[in-house]
Image (cartoon, rainbow, N blue to C red):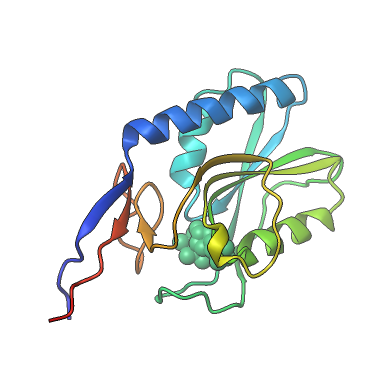
Length: 179
Ligand code: PRP
């Protein structure tokens, strides 16, 4: 069936902008003289990373890694696929990973482990939205925007079957009432 799901705003574009600005101020304080390498986890982080770096007025570099585990479903497959390798070397770099959401933690844990093996000088994690109730593996978040309830979220980079990434707000899908 192709019916349009009902969407409700969880975090509005104004709330997102305030959170991004606050996170940028925290990151600026810690990294302004370190020329960090910011690594966005694709695809979900593209919008967050793009907005975040517009607030960072000091030298930095950007790269992306493509990881995927959800495929077409709403549940993680549990297996993380490397769909786009990193372009840069992280050895000796001050690395800050930028992620849109931590749910089970499997994607982020995989990414941090993958990067740690490549010997960065430091490795930290910045996440826009955390869903701690869903965690399957522990993840330490150094910079956090929002804590969200256990709802399926879309918008601001987050997808459902690759759709809805373009929504400017973070929304949840309202459950249909059973009749
Ligand atoms: C989503 C999201 C995170 C990950 C979080 O990515 O962007 O990277 O899931 O879930 P987890 O904590 O349970 O691992 P997805 O695998 O859907 O790929 P995408 O970024 O291309 O949408």
